[in-house]
Amino acid sequence: MTRLVDVPAQFDDRSFEQFAGAYAEAAKDAERLLFDAHAAEWASPYGLVGLLAAGQAARGAGSPDRPLLTAPTHAEVLTYWTRAGFFREAAELFEIHGKLPRVKPAEQSDVLLPVTPVRAAEDVHAVVSNIQQRASAILASELGLDPKATMGFAMALSEACQNIVEHAGTGGWVAVQAYHWRRKLARRVVMIAVADAGVGFRHSLEPTQSKRFGARWSDAAALEAALFQGVSRFRDPGRGQGLAGIRRYLARWDGKIAIRSGTARIAIVPRWDDDVPLKDGLPAFPGAQVLIIIPEQGSTTP
Amino acid sequence: MIQHIDVHAVLQESVSGVYTDLVTRPTGRVVRERIERAMATSRDAVTVARIDFTGVGCIDYSCADEIVAKLLRDRRAVVVLSGISDGHREAIEPVLAGHGLAALIERRDGSGELEALGAPEAAAALLHELVARRLVVRTAVGTIALTLA
Image (cartoon, chains in turn purple, brown):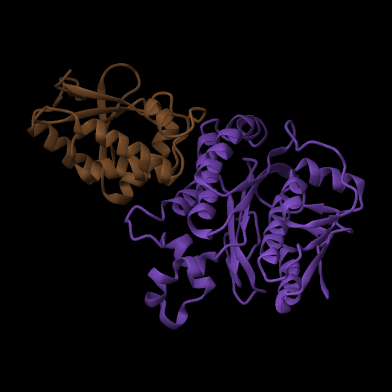
């Protein structure tokens, strides 16, 4: 029997909870899953890498068959997903139904980094190397960031990707895109989205942190410990620098970070956003999903 | 004598030659171990190593910790960082401050003048110690310079 997971028509970090709920319900009995994206009208980088993480989890969940994916039917959506590099990665995870256009992943566009696999340190090198040249023009000219901010951006991206390599126990994906964010700001933003279907923060930190928290130990506690206390599963005192560094960078540029892992989601919410700092009791979703948004500089009053 | 270590060259030998960025812990570890091996070859009573980051693109926090903080923590040598860009500082400074460490940085203007970067108390203690050991001097105009060439 095949279980259906609807992909939201507008698939971003907000509608991800709807998707995660459908995934958690459908994945209960380890049947083959069908991810239905035929009605998709738009997906943010977060939606795209999140869908890949779901496919990765579904492949490892017990069903001998690859999960199914029905591709969007809107030609423009299909073209965008292809240019964003989604189908190149999805082809390894899903049995895809639908006619895919023959377009190459974007090289000159707002897609600063197409959906890119991150499995090892070498991949992080490639990501950082690729992003710097393409991002510098966008960050400086369109977002009004100091040209020096490009290196900080690359650092933040590197650390976000390293979370996969060091903690997930499996591979994941990263995507970076600039776009005009009408919903919140009516101005341009750059979004970094990173997702994996690995062990998640709670499992990664459990050996070193769970005793300290006792009965309070949970996905939410693990996320708080990682993001705000800089704890790491490694006992090396220098560990935990990555998320702290990302926080510093975002504080300087009025950016946002949200991390979802397991049944919780934590966010550092800038004044231009109305997100919730901590949500617990969400539908269980494997691994970790990280969202970083850097807005165009100037007044960011919503 | 001051030992000169070209980090960009070490990086090129350590990972694929096409990358110029010091990112990821594994890369940092390999680069640091090579630097430590190079420093171990010094026969001077006091090793002063000028670690030159010229040509290095981005340094992330993990590499700043794995290379700079660990080299300083081990205290095998007096370390002077050179070729440090503003972007490099952005990664190195908070990492050092977090560890309560400080490093000497050579200004990029060619003057040879030094400044201490990192935790303020550690920076003051480092300068005091190096002046006492006569490895650096305070100049007439209030700057700091190495006594060795």
